[in-house]
Amino acid sequence: MSGVIWHESLDSTMTEASRLATEGVGSGTVVAALRQTAGQGRQGRQWLSETGDGLYCTFILDVADATAITLGLGVAVVEVLAPIVGEGLDVRWPNDVLWRGRKLCGILSRLENGRVLAGIGVNLNQTVFPDGLRTPATSLRLITGKSFSPQDVLELLRRPVEEMAALSKLDRLRLFAQTSSYVSGRRVRVDLDGPMLEGVTDGLDENGFLRIRKEDGTHETVYAGGVRALD
Figure 1 (cartoon, one colour):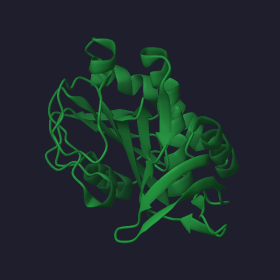
Figure 2: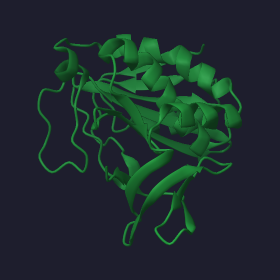
Figure 3: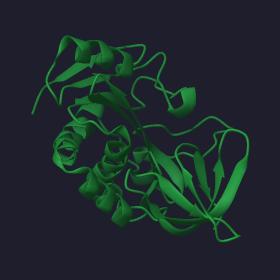
Figure 4: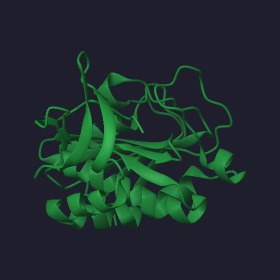
């Protein structure tokens, strides 16, 4: 495995990883920070990144499909966190790891010059969260009553992430479908940044996008949007 580059503070691990990827660092290199001043969430949202609260890191991976690796990394996170928190973990398409419906981890991947930059943020030690979050959040500390080191959790993640990156796209999609309750038979509402789509999830297409069966029996494929369970 390649190395981890730790920083006391960065604007964003994704931004620094982009710079290093351009310089040609090896696949599996991880940029991590104890604090981010401009952490990135999906659709341009801010990821809260205070010192001591969470794990903030970006993996540089030599894979060519940001969608499938995002789904696969959710599975990798579940593999690592399940022994810590027990039952109740789920992966909400495409990039949120939930514990009993509360957000525990977010994943943000983007493709740059044939490589994927995969940002992973895990809530570790928060005891309170801001009001008004789109999804209620939780942390490992709230679940277990224990504090966690970001360095220790990252070390647990590194091998599962690299193993997931080595799999085929088909295998990543298969594992996601086995892990996530959102893939099939889940009644959901999807925020498409304007119109709302409601229906029942009906599997993934060949690229990992979510198929929705609407009330009239027709299908629509979701390529991006906020998915919320209605049951």
